[in-house]
Length: 335
Image 1 (cartoon, helix red, strand yellow):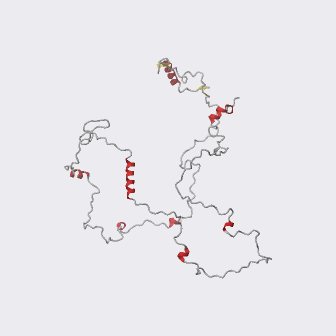
Image 2: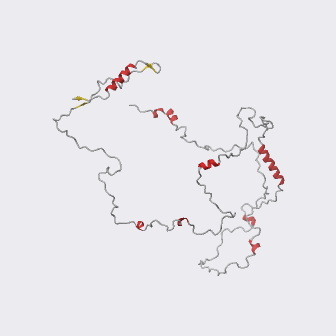
Image 3: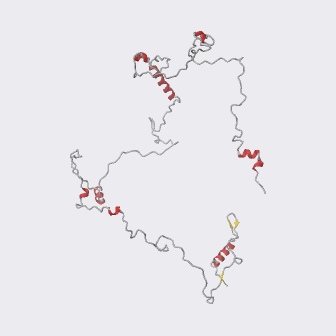
């Protein structure tokens, strides 16, 4: 058995030596940092050993070996590349056979010719249109053209004043009547809008005339009845039809029907309690509050409450309230 070579032995020895030298140095608040346990002596660590391969043992028996998987969409990735099934198919799309080719004009300028001449001119000024032909300009020619040209000066103004809130430097504020003078305080009435509205309403009511007559009739009817407007019904107004014959079979009674207690025929006898006493109409007036009677009996009170409380309100069903009221129900099971 041959021990495998340790690739990190020199690096491990170097780091372990540096950690031992810097273990007693104070760092970060005078606390010493001990050496890391991840880097140190690896005498107790398991070592990897490999069996030497000799020619006497013969060829090593191995299992089935495969190449690593290939990635991509090229033809060498598939096990076998198949050609599309559409190749060699006798079917042809009818749209492709009837497709028109590119149109070639005999005259190269035929594409830009209008269908006809403009009969009515849109130029009402009478000047002939001349193309500018200045889409592309030469920068050197433009520079030489405007080299000695000086543009006219614009509006002159004084430089801006520097200042702000709380700065009372002279010349900062525009001023009223005098430069830098603060405006006088003008009191503003809080009820100015309400007073203006009240004044407008008073002026409006002063110009309105007296209210016209207003009756108490319900309305919803014509001023005259149908008889007064269209006359009586003496003249026939519908299609004349013969009355239908009565086919009811009448039973031959011995005598005509006579009730045992006939109705009263006079006005006084038809009433149950006689003629009621006349009560004048008090008229429609404003509502009045009845005087309170101190000797009146107490009002009737119902025994049942007007509003029944829910037996399980939200306060009772709150988790914290139920836990404090029944702690045993919320205890965690213990083994």
